[in-house]
Length: 132
Image (tube, rainbow, N blue to C red; front, side, top):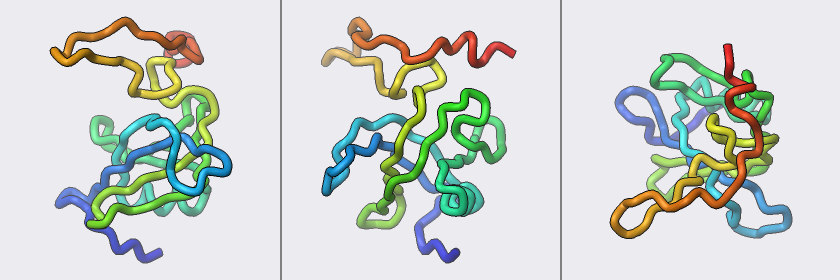
């Protein structure tokens, strides 16, 4: 596959991952997470139809859901006008966040950057899933 995107100097491209809304003509769902892809992660994602990412902290490729079972099936994808950011609409199995929430963006802030009470319940017990 020939991906003509603008990867960073270290070979990565940012990916915004959004929940697909059935029947929506344009991207309309909740942002579930942000992650990085390298060319291999992008190729694996296209080959399998499931999201793969590059973990900067672990220095390795990973399939989303390989530990939790909470996979992300690609519905459609876009690049931005500069071709340096990707947007994926996905079908999320379970929660996207390793904390047990549906989205990594569950912590609301006020205008002074103080955390407001979390208003949503976890969709899975992160301690049970990641206790190893």
